[in-house]
Length: 389
Image 1 (cartoon, rainbow, N blue to C red):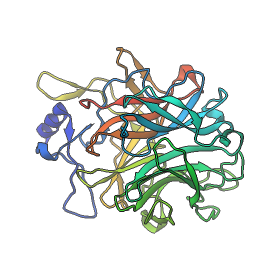
Image 2: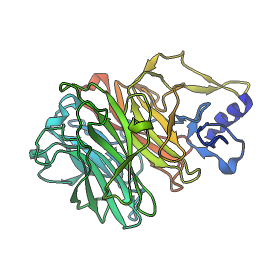
Image 3: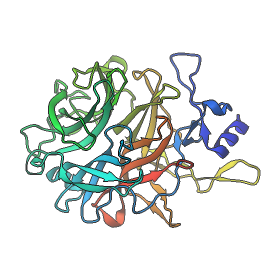
Image 4: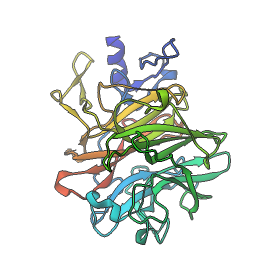
C-alpha cells in the first residue's frame, strides 16, 4: 500500500472506489490509469493538488471586497469566455460589516483563472439600496436549458439576515438578465432546532432536472447561535422545488461537526457525490509534499496544528449518507505564488471548483480569501490544479 501511495502521489492521480460494504465508504488507490482521477493527492485522495497561484488571478478589486464566487454552469461558454456571479461588497466595506453592502454582480474573464472583471450592470440594479443579497450558488439545468442562481436574501426585510430563505433566479444566458423566481426552500423556523434558519445554498442539477441543494443551517437560542452552523441536504424534482430534506440520521445534519459554505458536485467518472466546505472544527493543514531520492513523497514543513482556515472534503455514494476525514484539510491557509513568494491567509472560505470538460478533473479552485495585511478587505482567490491545461 505504501508503494501504491508513493506511486500515485508521484504521478498525482487518485482513484475513489467503494468498499464492498454498501454502508461504508473508503477512499483507496488503484493502479489502473483508465480509472484514475487527476487533481487530488494524499493517502485518502482528499487533498487538492495545487499549482502556484497568481496574485492577479481571481476577482480582486483593490478598493472593494468580494466574498463568494460561483459559475452558472460549465465554462467556458460558447463564446469562449468564463462568466461568474460574485458577491461584491460596495463602498469600501469589509467582510466584518458585509450585511450593509453586499450584492451580486456578474464578472467575466477570457481565461479560467482570470483576472475576472466586473460587468457593467448588477444582477439587480436596486439590490444595493434594499435588502441584503449574497451567498450565491449557481448551476445549469440541461433539462430546461436554463441557468439557475440561488441566493440568500430577505425579501422586503432590508439588512435582515434572519429570514433564512433560499431564493432562486433564472436566465436563458449565463450573464443574464436574471429573473426572480422567489423562495424555493424555507424551513419552519422552529426555535431551538439546528436548522431553524437556512442559507448559503448551492445546487447540483442532474440531467433530468432533479436538483440537490446543500445548505448551511443554524439554530438560535435567546437570539444567539446556540447550535452552531451545520450542513443539510434537500432534493426536488426540479430547481423550482418544493425541496424535501434528506440525509442525516433522524433529521440531523449530514455530518456531525460544524461546517458551512458548501460546494457540491457529482463526479462524472465515478458517480460519487463530493463537497468542499469551510470547516469550523480544527483539522490539520494539508502537507507540503516534495519528492525524495527514493521516489517517496515527504512533507516539507513540520506538522502544523489543527486549523479552521481552509476547506474540508466530504463525500457520499448516494447523496444522502455523507462521510468525512479528520486527517487533513483539502485546501489550507498556505498558498504558493507563481512569483516564488507565498501567502499565509487569515481566512479561506466559500470554495468553488471549475472543472475540466470531463466534469471530473478540477481545473481551478476559487475561495473567498483574506490577508492579515489587508483586513478586513477580502477577495476571490483562484488557484490552479497541477497538470491541467
